[in-house]
Amino acid sequence: MLSLYDTVSRKKVPLDPLRPGRVGVYTCGPTVYRYVHIGNLRTYLLTDLLLRAVRFAGLTPFSVQNITDMGHMHQEALERTEDKVIAAARAMGKTAREIAEFFTGAFFRDCRRMNFLPSDVYPRASAHVPEMIAVAEELERKGATYGEGGYLYFDVTKAKGYGELSGAILGKGEAAGRTDGSIHRRKRRPEDFSLWLAAEPGREFCWESPWGVGWPGWHIECAAMAGKYLGPEFDIHVGGADLRFPHHENSRAMAMTATGGRFASLWVHAAHLQVDGRKMSKSLKNEYTLDDLEARGVDPMDFRYHCLTLHYRTPMNFTWEAQAASRKALARLREVFAARGGEGISPGTGSGAGEVRRRFREAILDDLNAPKALAVVHEAARSGFPGDTLQALAGEWDEVLGIGLPVAAPGDARAEPARPEEVAPGEVGDLARLRDRCRREGRYAEADALREKIREAGYDVLDRKGKPARLKRI
Ligand code: AMP
Ligand code: ZN
Image (tube, rainbow, N blue to C red):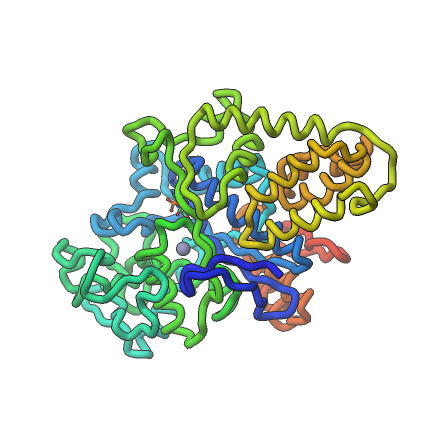
């Protein structure tokens, strides 16, 4: 079975799906006011590798990755009540919605270029404010909030298990936010955080709520969307290590308090990527995107391979030299695996292939040890296996690695790196996918309610046997 290093229990834990055969995964997705950089992509690659490993283990993943398309995303920005999407829009002379839509499209394009499996749902934060309000109301009912004048705060002393994830201790260490800033002067303690904030005049993103016109705090976003699409308890939560505190600690505290459920069973965190030993930043001009890499002759798949040469929990130092070495190594691998042989021989037949298959599997199921798995792939490439054995191995292994190892005869669909299907943009696509899932699981009343919502949005679904439903305008 697949084991993963869990940040809460601080040890490797065997994955034990809450529902037999199915694995619910939530990933903190991008804030869409700029292109994603290669650090973000390293973290999203963890989700992709995880989904592929879940399939390799014979289970079916259900993946939810949110799109933060409004501006409550960073604590320091929140302190200044600055909305990054709005700030970017102002700078580019566009509306915040236009900016968010543009960079959401760019994000999906980057995911395709990185050969990521598409998630099942990409919920937009701006389309889930009623769900966030519902979570805040539930917390209010449970007596875990306070506030006045359009602001509502979460009282972290009411949360069971606060600090379990990040090791944060109330009243000590790094605080979730300062209390001295003008808008947060009403907070009782630094660790408490805002669930709702009053809108300043002229703010583009704001909503009616029981606390007045305003906007939701950042942490409530993931708690509400994970709850909607995965329920009060699900299997795995993924994100970058920097988000452990305060974002993940707070999402968890709030969700657990609101629902009484466990939220995620396992928390998986990707270590950060630096460039030439330094944190990426605009001022150092080292905040590289996939386009920057391509401009220097590095294919996104070369970068994907490069990331896989390091374990996801090891901090990565990106250098052009190391990336160039990875590019060569991948080209060499592809050459060896492309060697043609006979047809129809399955891996594992003779020549020690069974042994390399076993070790590859062991590496992947042991906390997604991609570097160890790649070492096995290189060993197989050097081993003098017949071409047909190599191609059969490539077919099996590339399902997990997704690095475009060539397989089988020309004309075989897998001879080219698999490209994830086009992701239907917008909320309606998310609803259709959720409805498909409900139908698969026999939850027909929920499926019918979702169809109504889809119709309200001006679309209808055409069901197709064994395939995702198609959307058409009505
Ligand atoms: P952001 O758009 O900044 O909210 O980040 C989106 C995701 O990328 C989060 O899971 C972050 O933890 C992750 N992330 C941000 N910077 C880096 C980095 N330098 N290396 C790896 N992951 C990162
Ligand atoms: Zn999140």
